Length: 230
Image 1: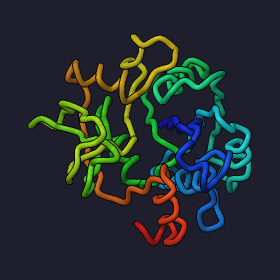
Image 2: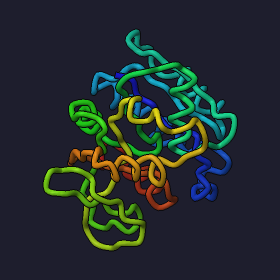
Image 3: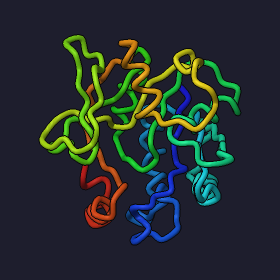
Image 4: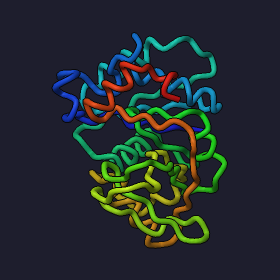
């Protein structure tokens, strides 16, 4: 299974903490955060990794080059010529590597354990990994029908407990063939189209969900350590 890892975001909310660095390489317990993500992918048996980069790509490339040796690992770096958004980054990477088949996509600034990736692999694509949180306000809620299909994605702002996207998708290139290789958002462009066609199935993940996207969340993870928060 191939994994497309999105690590090109600007990380503007973290500038006060990490400066101009790429957030995927933020230090946690003396290691770049991205290394924990790769570690869990390996536990799930996923070693064919495509890193979709843009902002501070050289920092991601350096981290990847210094990962512990793994003879099973295959690494490809695909730089976006300009910021293309989460969906555009995936479409651009697939076109550059000339790939046709199943894959998973995920965010480099979120830690989930190997079970999240296993669920994405084991559920027929297209699938979205969802997880329960105590307050959806920061993320936006996911609404499912009785058959486990994604019925709607609610904009951020809804408060209270509920299911949210964990940012992991099990996909196949055939579901993306209608989209041009251009700037696009997974959340606003591609996923709504799959939902409107009643194609997107949800699979529930119950493990740790650690997002370093804000100063407060990064501080919590740095103070507690990734593995202590699992």
